[in-house]
Image (cartoon, rainbow, N blue to C red; front, side, top):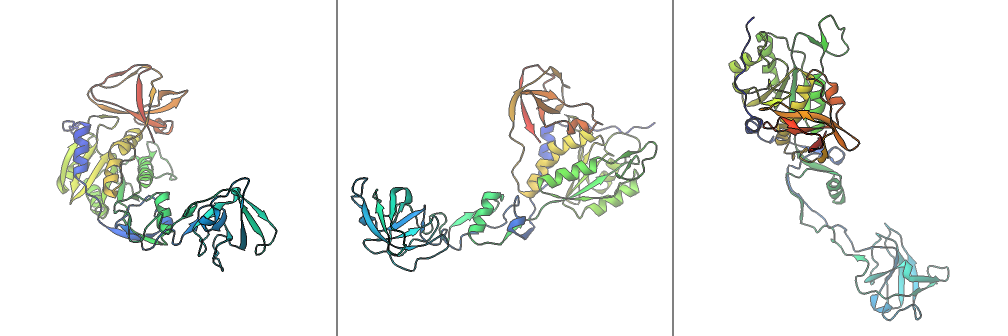
Length: 408
């Protein structure tokens, strides 16, 4: 039996550099509504077309006054002011505040004309029951502009509030809403051709004949693409023939990036390498990671092709380690998995020297427990909460050694 030899492995660092060099951020833009904008990236700067707040407003419940009227007020010598009106948030006063008078205001309501401060309600006492005939005792003086939010205190008109390239999160969506914006230009999401291959796999739900298995990788990769903010386009299962591989790859070139699973190993019937070499350029075939060694990187007509291993754990692990950074660059998103938490290993773990390992793990009782079974077991990932990275020059992680857990 003839076996196709895999080219010399490259390091994870070199492989990652090559992958990122093969893609550029997507220039396409589109307009979306605010409810669809979370997680998207602004394609243009946002300049405030109005002030926020658009009028001076009360910073708390109380009484709008002329500050000078309250000077000298104290617990034993309160100042008495005539209450001439009551307004609520959303209302505007019909009367002006003049010397010796006040208007009751609610938090957020416009400051009535003539007033320059607000006495909080806790420092007052109402005499009488009528809003137009009562009097208010003021027990604490206020200074001009106290408890008043001036016009434009939050956002000044004409100011750039969000630069281009900003990733929109709930707080930034709030800024847009405060400015009355309903639609916003954002960069398009990357489209990802997800192509399963192998004569042995069938779609979930189809009858399972002897020797066949259900397609797992298409769904884990598509879910990962969606989680990062891309749009997966799932292709039919590609057969292990050069003709079908070439035809499918040509159709997939409408997407921004092509991701395949299976067909990148050294088996006699694996024709992926031959197809990519004939249609474009192979950047590397084989990377020093565990699991996920038989990874293929190529470029066809300017589009990156990433051939993942067929084993489910290897495929999804490389999805997190290799595909996610590529998608983030395409979508102009920051790398999302740089953080983590340091915890001790629950037991000694032996790695493979010379290969950077992504080890699926879970946390139990404050310790890191390896969840890896074998590359073909999808439960290696389903039972894990995250992963740790073991460098290529490390072959042993001792019990109790602190490692950085990166959560999914």
